[in-house]
Image (spheres, rainbow, N blue to C red):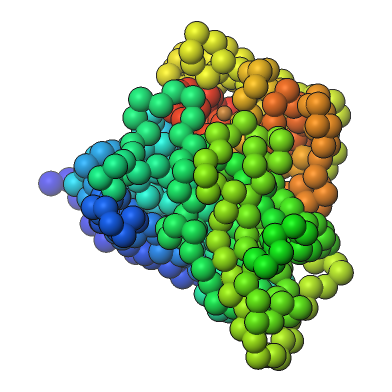
Length: 466
Ligand code: C2O
Ligand code: CU
């Protein structure tokens, strides 16, 4: 051999570096699998499919700034794709609908969690069967905790005074089995209202303040929620909205009812102190207070009951007059993109396109780092659509066009959102900062029947130097 051959060296050690924080990553495992639930006491059980065999799935509680890797094993019969709704995930971990995991396989999802505190949710997003998978149970809450929130002394303690309330509306067959969404092309309303999986449940509470985190995980039903005293059902009781999709509002908003369309999250503080020894009911306005187009049934105006303890308790929690400085995006200049949500030839469409139209489904290119104003117009006649944009939090700037002329609700205006409800004939303006990643992301109607058929499209966040 020639004497000037290279020296044999060991490759260098690969050192572990955490892409964002340099801190340990939290690793979880979840499994999508069938389970049964007795919904009607006198009928057979329903077979459902949920994360770790429950619905809602187990709640993640993750401190802000802690990255997670979640291995999700598909032990169901159908393919799955998991989206962490409310997270600016990298595109390969965003639940892209065609990126499905087959039964018997798993996928590892990486989620950055660097956002401020909020309640996100994880749910199925498999192409064409999202409604089927989600209705069968594939949805769960994901809470990002935040020291800035902890400092406020809001009611706290997960499952104690800080309680997620995941709403669904399902439909069961004569034998007690779940009615599938297959074959539905307009909506799946459901006539059984369930909260955290239980039909019209009750909750024992103390006469003090509670933080409730509402998530509407229903396939098609919107809610307009209000509280009444069971003994005197006329007279809505006041409560304070403190947070929306993207976390705390700037300041609490006192209301006596609140719209919650599909995929929206609203957090409230309700003070039971004045109702010691009473029963209260959480109810839902018929036709969602005139904004929705939902079919109502005998008991869809009822949601759950609160049984308030008689004995006074200490309550050190407070709702401060200022909650935080909301990081609203810098102002944009004029409308960058217009999207029309409509129906044509029996299919739901965005600007004439459905997600299956692979060649045309990218409806916008957005240079990374820019702030854009999007106009979302509902031109589908008598239907309404909650529109979700992946990757970003947006500010709802304006809403017009509907006969109800409701404008932007105060609890929408005071915070950032990732879903906005487009009521009948409404047009909404949303402004967002498109970052931090490049990639192709989905936006769509969150009526899951509409999403599957096929009111979904994509936008491409392009690299700065592209
Ligand atoms: Cu909650 Cu694209 O979904
Ligand atoms: Cu829709």
